[in-house]
Length: 243
Image (cartoon, rainbow, N blue to C red; front, side, top):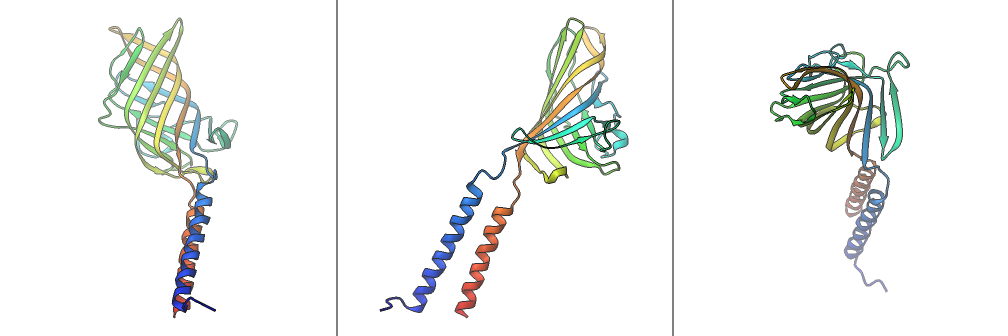
């Protein structure tokens, strides 16, 4: 004997449908489908310091999103949780258009004997990774907050370490279908090729080295989208049955 009315059966059916979608989407979203950290390794970074600002060696013009005003890179390597995803290789070895556009204003006086200084972050600096040959060429455009600069002279080998936290992500169009999200950090590790000293402080230098951009991976919404589509499909089916 059927103890449920047709209305009660519809309620039970709807409950089971929603429960199925919830469990299914939880399994998809809860599994180890996506990596948690995106690392972008930059090879062949060249920077200059004029006593006040740090810029890429390509030009002091910043934020133009123009490769003509940026420093060409040797390589850009993308990894997810230390697993390689892909590498772009610039000339002369490769043919990929890869550049970095850096501007760090208001760097405090750096002691010639070595030491660390921190910018105020006002105005903010910029750090743009460019990944096409013509403007606008933004692969990733970042605004930098306070930047920490450490200068370490060791015998005749003078090294310079730069690090900064990102205030905001302006825009991005990364290759390999990747998307980076907050929190993001930027670091550079460079070795100076020329340094000038005046009054006990570093008044200028040129340096070359590597860089890293690290941030959270923004997962593709495939699992969530599938769950939402399934839910609304079941909802529409239930409404058709009631009709």
